[in-house]
Amino acid sequence: MSLTSAATLATLDKTGPRRITDLAVAEGVTQPAMTVLVRVMEESGLVERKGDPSDKRVTLVCLTEAGASYVRTRHQAGVDAYARLIDELTGDEVEALAAALPALLHLAELESHAREDSDR
Image (cartoon, rainbow, N blue to C red; front, side):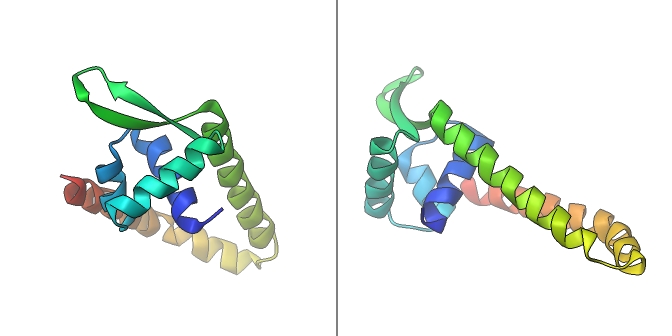
């Protein structure tokens, strides 16, 4: 699976159903490229298109259960990989990582706010 496909699934998992144009902006690709990507993921059973109940002219892309499961599995694989790597660090290195956590969490929060602002 391409990085853009995985990122798109993660975006849908995080934000819920979205329009193709919104997904294209969020992932930094053209709308036609996102349309092709969504079609491929739809054929793979990872996403589905549904009508927007608030606007019948709009189609939303939604994760299927298979898509949500894929995102969870990838997330857990990443967590497991980092846990194995952290186990190889010295005690001082683990302490340094723990001390850096507040700053890293703040960075993630800033990035999240920046993404929300760019989606508006």
